[in-house]
Amino acid sequence: MGANAVPDVVIYHNPACGTSRNTLALLREKGVEPRVVEYLKAGWTEIQLKSLAARAGVPLRALLRTRGTPAEALGLTATDVGEDALAAAMAREPILVERPLVEGPRGVALCRPADKVLDLI
Image (cartoon, rainbow, N blue to C red; front, side, top):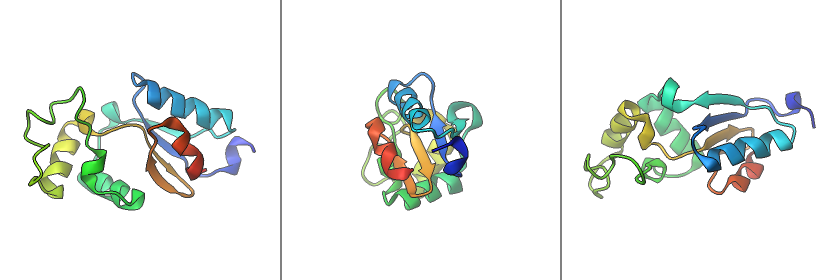
């Protein structure tokens, strides 16, 4: 399968993250050259985050990264924090988004572990 055989694969990537690097390597090993978005540089919009969560079939909270982030200090781990507040905080502070998120022809998933990406291509 050539790189052009699987259209519209996007990895929201953090090159400092081992799982994100492994997911990107696995895609390339399978002949898929995704569009790589370094989300810490590119940032997010609230609409984009909500849409990715909806397409992944998970609540936005499932995409909140708490380890190594200010999520707890910002009060975002409280169960009463709504999706709008989460989306706003995650858009302001891109590090709050778990990685890697991958969009593919078969949907969207948080690819932890990396082999979850195989379900998307």
